[in-house]
Length: 72
Length: 373
Image (cartoon, rainbow over all chains, first blue to last red; front, side, top):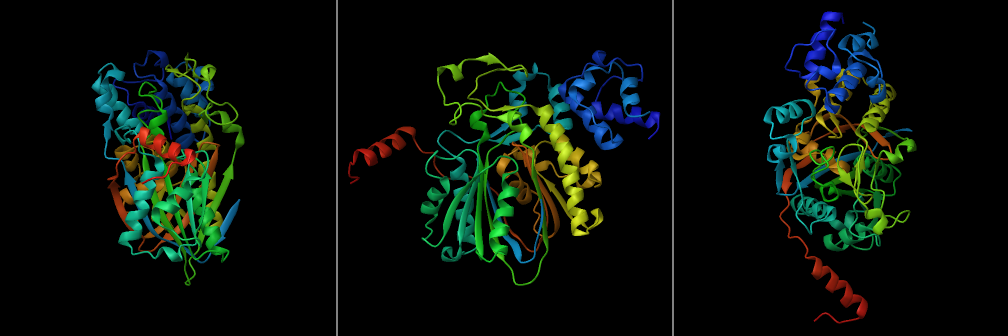
């Protein structure tokens, strides 16, 4: 998966109405709720092979930070 | 642990759900009446409809009707059922085991032994393993495995972490000996570190219900609760599920020397759509094998979600990989060949609820020694 594919999959996983970019701040996403966080954890695990927890997710501030976590 | 069985099959699975249906769209007040918000949750997690019992109907009632339907329609001779198992986490009484009530109501004879197994969402799979073991050992030719749960009775509508998820249901499964060799494989395990992730803290013998355990306080998940209510830390449970289930499935496939493409149906405990999709993907199965519409139509029946899903999706033939997982944390996965398994379809409960005062009167009469005319 390259960075563009990651962004597209993230957009889909979050079911966010607004467009997301690597600079998008997570707390600014209207739909950044526990369901979205679970979706990110699930996506990182199933699609990227990376395990995260809710508390680890708290340390990440942007979509770019999540991409870094995914190794991208 | 991992196990293989050679002479056991599932002949029939019967499923019953209550008539009363709740749609998440009927609960819009909990989502600021924002239909788009509900649509999004429906798409991501699968929240949609669930079935709930009316007052006075128990898990045993639902399982009883499923068993009765099967016995009558399949013309099963009860004299040849060697064991009756009831797997549940909401028994009719603390004492005696509820399997004895089912034994009486269904009219079994003394040669049919009865026992309860107390488990949550891993229940049907672990009990199925038990039934398979009883038959493979030669001890039993036929085992009737009843299962049921009514999680809705312990969950307040205000608990939006749990209320939209859980539905009620009952089932009966006939497990029997087969001459022709048919290989079934089971992988089971447990992680007791999760005992505090899903629990009903007060109501057992460790913490009997008293005023102090009924004191209200705020859950970290944002709803008012007390210790007599069902609690689930969804994040923790999700992490445990992802830690154990894909590996359990892989272990099973390796042990059975079966590749993913040989599996006809992947049927997972209907925890919620998000987790089902994630496990399906992580376990190397294509997205089109994701089966979550039983969850979306009936909810998560915990103990008995798999028999309901099998009936809803009409899985009666083919190589089936099924997995159940839940409170404890307990898990069991299996690869079983389904060969013309009789399915009842998901039926609606037609029995009557019992009135509380009638039950009280009955017990008082028995214990006071009043003769029933």
